[in-house]
Length: 192
Image 1 (cartoon, rainbow, N blue to C red):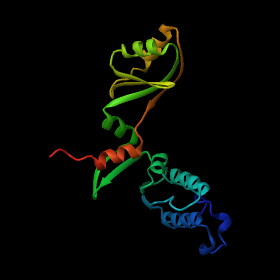
Image 2 (tube, rainbow, N blue to C red):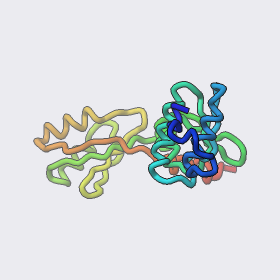
Image 3 (cartoon, rainbow, N blue to C red):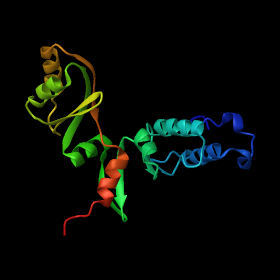
Image 4 (tube, helix red, strand yellow):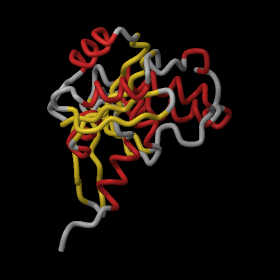
């Protein structure tokens, strides 16, 4: 009861609880015998945003003590809650790994978004000259630098910007979303 935060509702009939609290009662019932594995089917569907946040936190807490399998089509929710995913297509597991690993493997390239104060054309030229950089594009106000997935040019990028006398305002890796990964794995046809 404690971990599910149901203490103040102990005297309330389950039918009188909101859908979110009824789902918590179901989770409390499922964990009462301390199973090693807990299976949750669409745990956040049909509940309000506050209950979604509370359920997400509950899942993270339970994940410290249990293996949790979540079946869900709400992929942004899965990516916010889970460390690892298994993607199924037509009843078969087609991929299983950490989301960031799947993103790198599927893309084959690493993408880095950066914002630099400096002359756009000259900055792009210098970035493209960095060893391992395969492509540089500009999406106002950001430069997108692409390189092979196994390379990490961030140090060289920073060095190039400093040497150019420019200011680096931001730099971040761009990952594929779980939805992008799912679609790539389940909609692309295998070669005949």
